[in-house]
Image (cartoon, rainbow, N blue to C red; front, top):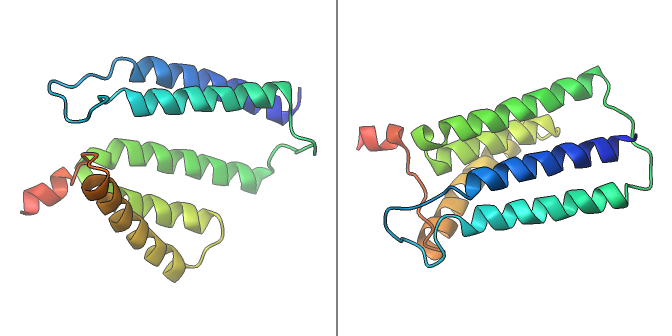
Length: 148
């Protein structure tokens, strides 16, 4: 079994688990027209469809498993994403997204100045895009609220 199919099976299982969790999302009051379930469920369906596609039509080039350095980078990426999810409410969307962008940028070989600048633009820009323009409520962060 090649690495594309292993990834597709793992991603399909992850999509199913995330869809099951997202199906339980409910809000005490309706702050959006479609509720809090629609966007995560749509993403889970899209992820599942992509993983089924990859199962049926695996990539053309044979990709080998990562070497030790690549495996360490993958582990760092998973830890960074888990940390992002765990610290999201406390740090708030803007700060958590900026830090995640810096970490991922560095993992992919970006320089410090470029990663920090991109992280700041991504964190602040996406916050205003979602919170102000699209009116999707995002956490400002317990840390920031405690300072205000």
